[in-house]
Image (cartoon, rainbow, N blue to C red; front, top):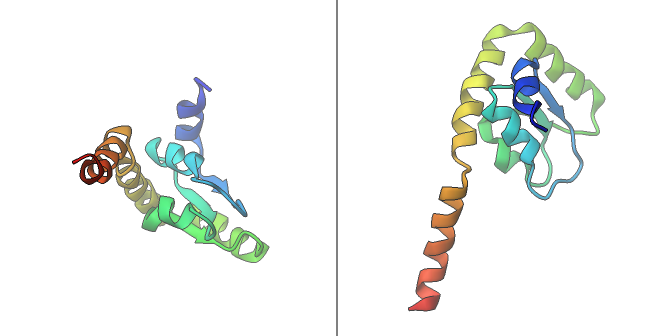
Length: 110
Protein backbone atom coordinates (compact mmCIF):
# COMPACT_ATOMS: atom_id res chain seq x y z
CA UNK A 1 0.00 0.00 0.00
CA UNK A 2 2.93 2.34 0.60
CA UNK A 3 3.76 2.23 -3.12
CA UNK A 4 0.22 3.13 -4.19
CA UNK A 5 0.76 6.91 -4.61
CA UNK A 6 3.81 6.34 -6.80
CA UNK A 7 2.10 3.64 -8.87
CA UNK A 8 -1.01 5.75 -9.37
CA UNK A 9 1.05 8.82 -10.17
CA UNK A 10 2.86 6.95 -12.94
CA UNK A 11 -0.30 5.40 -14.41
CA UNK A 12 -1.88 6.79 -17.57
CA UNK A 13 -5.31 6.30 -15.98
CA UNK A 14 -7.32 4.45 -13.37
CA UNK A 15 -10.02 2.39 -15.09
CA UNK A 16 -12.65 1.56 -12.48
CA UNK A 17 -15.82 0.21 -14.17
CA UNK A 18 -17.48 -0.97 -10.98
CA UNK A 19 -21.13 -2.00 -10.95
CA UNK A 20 -21.57 -1.02 -7.30
CA UNK A 21 -19.53 0.94 -4.75
CA UNK A 22 -20.38 2.15 -1.30
CA UNK A 23 -18.13 5.16 -1.77
CA UNK A 24 -15.39 4.82 -4.38
CA UNK A 25 -12.18 5.54 -2.48
CA UNK A 26 -9.93 4.28 -5.31
CA UNK A 27 -11.31 7.06 -7.52
CA UNK A 28 -10.30 9.74 -5.00
CA UNK A 29 -6.92 8.11 -4.35
CA UNK A 30 -6.14 8.22 -8.07
CA UNK A 31 -7.34 11.80 -8.41
CA UNK A 32 -5.23 12.89 -5.44
CA UNK A 33 -2.21 11.46 -7.27
CA UNK A 34 -3.04 13.35 -10.46
CA UNK A 35 -4.16 10.23 -12.31
CA UNK A 36 -7.01 10.59 -14.81
CA UNK A 37 -10.03 8.44 -13.91
CA UNK A 38 -12.45 6.47 -16.05
CA UNK A 39 -15.22 5.12 -13.86
CA UNK A 40 -18.75 3.84 -13.75
CA UNK A 41 -21.81 6.05 -14.02
CA UNK A 42 -23.46 4.00 -11.26
CA UNK A 43 -23.87 4.08 -7.49
CA UNK A 44 -21.76 6.68 -5.68
CA UNK A 45 -19.15 7.06 -8.41
CA UNK A 46 -20.72 9.98 -10.32
CA UNK A 47 -20.86 11.96 -7.06
CA UNK A 48 -17.30 11.06 -6.09
CA UNK A 49 -15.85 11.62 -9.56
CA UNK A 50 -17.95 14.62 -10.50
CA UNK A 51 -16.83 16.30 -13.71
CA UNK A 52 -13.27 15.22 -12.96
CA UNK A 53 -13.79 11.69 -14.30
CA UNK A 54 -14.96 10.16 -17.53
CA UNK A 55 -18.16 8.36 -16.56
CA UNK A 56 -19.09 5.28 -18.56
CA UNK A 57 -21.70 2.54 -18.51
CA UNK A 58 -19.70 -0.36 -17.02
CA UNK A 59 -21.65 -2.87 -19.09
CA UNK A 60 -20.93 -1.13 -22.39
CA UNK A 61 -17.54 -2.35 -23.60
CA UNK A 62 -17.51 0.00 -26.60
CA UNK A 63 -18.03 3.01 -24.34
CA UNK A 64 -15.26 1.80 -22.03
CA UNK A 65 -12.88 1.22 -24.95
CA UNK A 66 -13.62 4.68 -26.37
CA UNK A 67 -12.95 6.32 -22.99
CA UNK A 68 -9.64 4.50 -22.63
CA UNK A 69 -8.67 5.45 -26.19
CA UNK A 70 -9.52 9.09 -25.50
CA UNK A 71 -7.43 9.28 -22.33
CA UNK A 72 -4.47 7.50 -23.92
CA UNK A 73 -4.42 9.52 -27.14
CA UNK A 74 -5.74 12.98 -26.23
CA UNK A 75 -3.22 14.85 -24.09
CA UNK A 76 -5.61 17.78 -23.61
CA UNK A 77 -8.33 15.56 -22.14
CA UNK A 78 -5.75 13.75 -20.01
CA UNK A 79 -4.42 17.04 -18.60
CA UNK A 80 -7.93 18.38 -17.94
CA UNK A 81 -8.81 15.20 -16.04
CA UNK A 82 -5.60 15.49 -14.01
CA UNK A 83 -6.28 19.09 -13.00
CA UNK A 84 -9.97 18.55 -12.28
CA UNK A 85 -9.15 15.38 -10.36
CA UNK A 86 -6.68 17.13 -8.09
CA UNK A 87 -9.32 19.78 -7.31
CA UNK A 88 -12.07 17.17 -6.84
CA UNK A 89 -9.96 15.14 -4.40
CA UNK A 90 -9.57 18.23 -2.20
CA UNK A 91 -13.36 18.36 -1.78
CA UNK A 92 -13.15 15.18 0.30
CA UNK A 93 -11.14 15.34 3.52
CA UNK A 94 -11.50 14.19 7.10
CA UNK A 95 -11.55 17.83 8.22
CA UNK A 96 -14.50 18.62 5.92
CA UNK A 97 -16.27 15.42 6.95
CA UNK A 98 -15.77 16.25 10.63
CA UNK A 99 -17.05 19.80 10.17
CA UNK A 100 -20.12 18.58 8.28
CA UNK A 101 -20.82 16.07 11.05
CA UNK A 102 -20.55 18.77 13.72
CA UNK A 103 -22.97 20.99 11.78
CA UNK A 104 -25.52 18.16 11.59
CA UNK A 105 -25.17 17.31 15.28
CA UNK A 106 -25.19 20.86 16.69
CA UNK A 107 -28.98 21.35 16.49
CA UNK A 108 -29.55 17.95 18.05
CA UNK A 109 -27.31 18.76 21.02
CA UNK A 110 -28.69 22.24 21.72
